[in-house]
Length: 337
Image (cartoon, rainbow, N blue to C red):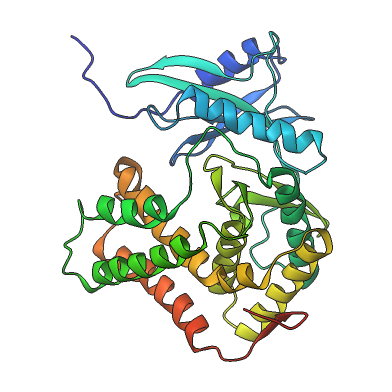
């Protein structure tokens, strides 16, 4: 009987472990376990002393060139003492493996393990260190380009809306809202395209789930799968909108924003114009990730429902309304956000 075609598969832990142990000359004591399936699939391989992360890119999600560019960025950051999870070369000094899965070609990369834990409720000290770390990252990537996507309003907002139209009716109030803010933010971003707002390579997904914290001050960033080119303030906006929805008490939220900006500005300047654009940045990236979920409906269909759309768009609304209604809030040294 011929094998029926598939669009996605989950690789066997046992066989993937044997494959990696052979390619990287690891001892038989290493065991491979599946950690998470999602946009890509993540496995851990470890023995009693060492632990690594295996990312198995889903078929057709990233080209080999895009992965090479991601790994180049990670090596650049590591060489400049920015704490990131970095790629491990195999015994022949290759960073990328290729396999033939049932659905087609898939790529595999072995990464260092980010020591520490995920800290959902970061204190002010850790937020300060997060700001400092992001600023050091931006110091390296400012005015640089990578051979990957450009995060402009067309991709963040317009394309996301077009993707969502395949699954939701345009007369839904949430879809109308996304179209409305898409036009509004696109016009704002177009006005600053030729300004002095800082551009470079961005991570676009820095939040508590993609950093490991060890002893409050030792922070490692990982999961650069969405890295690309864009306004550097996009990274700040996304971190803030995630922090906003974690911290119910907005006085605590404001104090953590101030701590983050203090840490950032200790290392790198951020202008008043960029600070004022942070609400638009957070909203646009949330809209973008709705588009990702629509694009990868094979992964996200279990929760990308009308109720989920209402909840997620509701978060964008709450965030935007907060900043639209806020008349005076000093975030850092007289800067109003």
